[in-house]
Figure 1 (cartoon, one colour):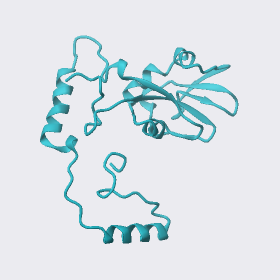
Figure 2 (figure 1 turned 135 degrees about the vertical axis):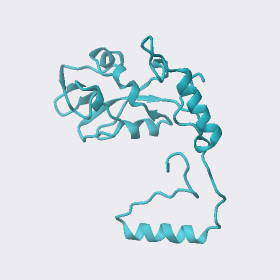
Figure 3 (figure 1 turned 90 degrees about the vertical axis):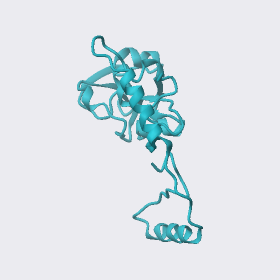
Figure 4 (figure 1 turned 60 degrees about the vertical axis):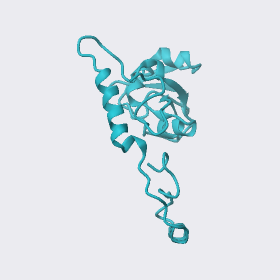
Length: 176
């Protein structure tokens, strides 16, 4: 929420740093009360827009990718940075539903990543490049593909996408 709303409605601080907590509370108390804020995606209209997109794109008789595969924006994270943060830093959101498009050797090659060896397993960081020994990691269990994982010597291959302002659940290229 803090990433998409911000001050004066949401404040982010390190709760373990008591000085920072105190300064933030003092700053909040000195400000006039902000007007109520309801993000569009939580309004009645925003909810109906998401339901419409969901219902219009359900396919029971043939395989169908939602969000569409053309909404994929691939990014390589810095070592120790999660895909969630990598995508956010570029004004995108991480889309777990698109990870399966990157969980293969061809995706590494297509993105200019050399993999001397490939290891398959159950790493929460896959798909990724492990910089300590220069091997690439692929996920055997697609249910474990995640935006959140990070490790100091791992560069993650991230499935990001653009989103509609005020409607993070929908991509820019998603038709309603």
